[in-house]
Image 1 (tube, one colour):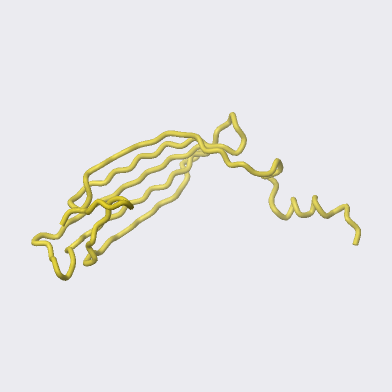
Image 2: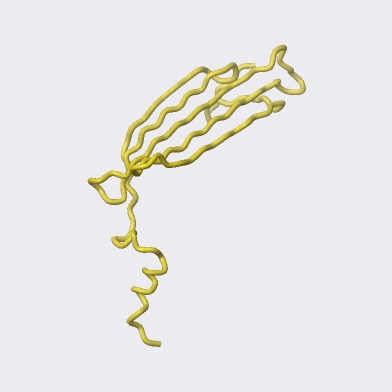
Length: 124
């Protein structure tokens, strides 16, 4: 049973499966942070249609981020992902980019300090 194509995209009707998903977030020093995701899928098909041999799939994702010095609140990104196995078509991809977080001018001030600055001059 191969993945079916619908208007929503690819999916598989398998419901006799087990999966292991692992994630790891961390920092490498000098402002670099990363996250990695690993998923292993073991599929036996459906109760009505068992596979003669179980199908397996591995999905990987690795993302690396670094704050950008030239634009406050932004970070540079690089990521790569891959899928390989019997359930979905083998594929891979990568991306590079920049992400900007928009917020208040004083976004580096902790929340309690911002609260004190806002209300310290008021008299009740």
